[in-house]
Image (cartoon, rainbow, N blue to C red; front, side, top):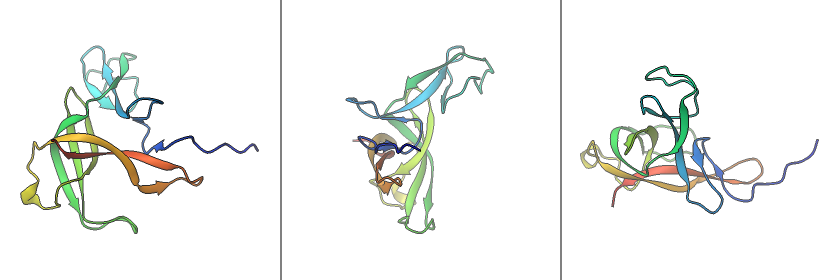
Length: 143
């Protein structure tokens, strides 16, 4: 069995996070050509209008609004708590889950519809078995 060489750079933490060589990272969605619905994750059938084979890959916006969140106080060993798990509606379509950073985990400081930016950072020091680091996306209050 041949050994694979280590990656030449960080790896995406999820399949829909794209890290093009020489370009900026982005979240990839799929948009229906028939009804314009946008979804995360590759698919061949639109979940909104049921049209088949009309989905095209699109680069999603790095801006959005906080839809809902949960402050997590208990997690797996090694995961720092509390943290804010959030669902964000992106401008132009697409709803995605991630962590909200740069704001205190206090409901009084987290308004719904909070404008946020998507930022791409190291995935909290996580590495694969070959020592390759991961890049993930996070949300932070818009500047």
